[in-house]
Image (cartoon, rainbow, N blue to C red; front, side, top):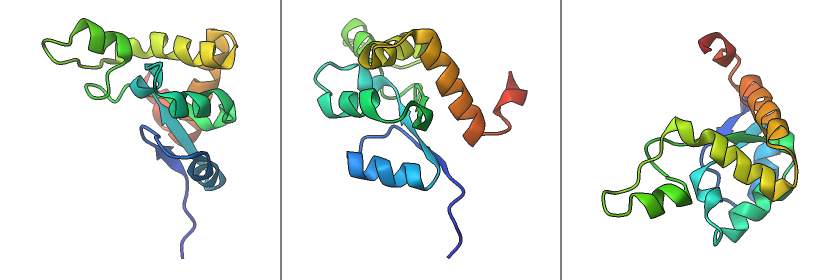
Length: 122
């Protein structure tokens, strides 16, 4: 068997046990729109308690819109966009009780670590 080089577990929605196994394999776990719903207690608990160095933020645009987009665009069908990332980051910061700047720095570093060509795209 070939070792898994890591990656991103996109729109992570698994258990703590699954999260721990992905992390052991070198994966980062993607959190985004689903985490913004107050009733998504399992996802929110994981986002609050998993090691910060294992988390990346994502929008999955145009899918998986955050709670506020669903409420705002319910009649037309909610769509997610990359410009929602700062607000999604704020939700994660609130869940973890830390500054949003710390979230932004950590999740950017995490994304760059798993996607080494990403910094060249800026």
